[in-house]
Amino acid sequence: QVQLVESGGGLVQPGGSMRLSCAASGITLDYYAIGWFRQAPGKEREEVLCDSSSGTYPIDSVKGRFTISRDSAKNTVYLQMNNLKPEDTAVYFCATAYSSCWGEFNYWGQGTQVTVSS
Image (cartoon, rainbow, N blue to C red):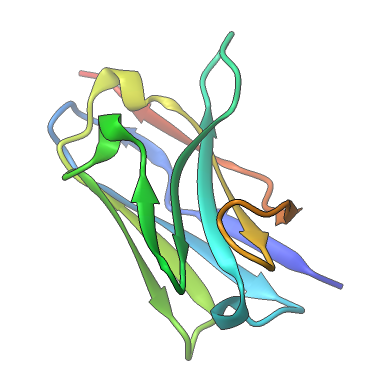
């Protein structure tokens, strides 16, 4: 059984940093493209950043602020978020795609809430 479990969310002040984790079981993340998505209240889910063997693809609004890293030994992917803004507030999800960042994301985590507020 495949499971993705996000953690690390919470409340942070504007300008602060936060690191989200996505721990996997049942699959080896090294073989997958990893996407981080977010959904704010009343808004559609958007893909924030995707990482694959061909590169890392962030959306414009997070370029220079969000980065992704992988720990193969822990089978975990991290989303480092710096200089957070109130508009980054959302539930963040990780997901995997077997083929590429443009393939179908087939496994999803349950999400973790990130709130950026003073």
